[in-house]
Image 1 (cartoon, rainbow, N blue to C red):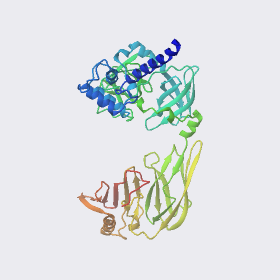
Image 2: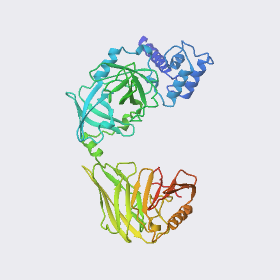
Image 3: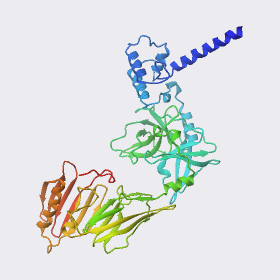
Length: 497
């Protein structure tokens, strides 16, 4: 009989203790098992003594005390609200009594740092650090970009796979087998003024303090948005920036001297993905992806007026050296080149000379592991019907077809262009060239806004409707220059005029 009575008593005690533990979970003020805006509201009301039931001896009070200082304030409520909207993980918060001695922090940093070698055109040594017991190592993606091979320089260890890469955040994760000590991670709980630490793999502890990034910093990697002022410099790229509890808060990307001060910038580890986002690949598979090449064009046929110049935006991936090619079977009718390959706006430029119909042009990019090619058919027509839109945009016209003159030079950048035309006085006068082009501009919606006359030139500025797009017409003794601003968004989805 006693045994029968003992079972329900133990069950009741279990429920009691579980309920109390749940109610005491940091941020869960109402004890319902989750953190919501209502918990933040309760904490704020308790801070101003509007919740008489929430007193220092209650579980609710302990759950609301997000900074462990024994006093409820609006800062506690703010932390709970940030947790409710997923801007902070309260599990990252620890009482000050959990701070570690500096020697223990140094040992944690020294143990977790791993040395790697990436082979590209040469060999690059870099560092990373393990963040869990599974051998997950965080490294800067830039260190393995376009790698041919990746090796870990630790006896008994091996790079098993590439788990994750994100060029946008500059983070990558490797899976390393072997004896790989790891460092805990603090993703969200740190503020300006907090002490931080870093170290070389075998060197002394380097002290620092989180600080706003100086205005003059101009970081090479803008995604590295934790900045720390160090008391001394160190070769710390790829190593962890740790808090006073011996946890990594970021991976350092850059060291910089500003005046006599040493600064480092790091990517916060809050940008690390969940394991569900991992896409494990062998090093060989990763290398093939890094060296994959592709070329795309938004059109498969283009009709260009005679004497016109077209600049068609391309999508090119994996271009290196001289591995882009154009096969044009009719050079007498038009010229085709691929330009600005390494800029944000690679372009296919076509100069037209003589009329023709449906001439196939092959565009090809050759990579180490694959080749990508496309076919574009080109027709050159004599019926100009105004002027050609040189960037594929309805508000940037080319005067060449109007004047019967191919530009002597043309320059296209990511947001600007410049065309130069030699005059043909025997064909068109200065006035005829100018007013024929102005007529096209006005029909498209441009308005003349300014004229500047110099001793040897005259400059006319035209603005497109109520936008920042402009075209400048400069008349010199022998040349006419047409320059302006082009569309800076995606040229694959251009709005109608």
